[in-house]
Length: 127
Image (cartoon, rainbow, N blue to C red; front, side, top):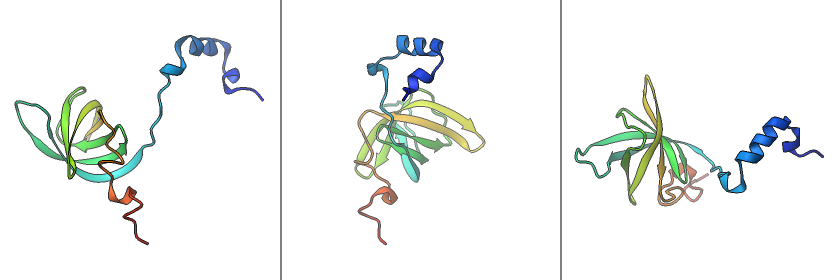
């Protein structure tokens, strides 16, 4: 049985061997669809602001929010939860007619603890 790498063209195999290593491979986190409203606000800003956003996707190290407020790559903000506040940083964004989609990262895992949408919590599901 041939290895997947052996099925690639020789030139591409050479490039991959030269430019990748076990340490350069990243763990892929499972993403979950979401549709929760979250309150977010300024993190350490001289101009405080607060706004609601729709959490569209969630994973342990981040998520995707839909907002009306424009945030830029690298900007930090606070996510206000019942369990406290979590600092997040904008990784990238995309604009469309409905607002701005913000992909963000958090420094410490925030899902499934301390935040978990109720429909993703098997202990809260009732049949």
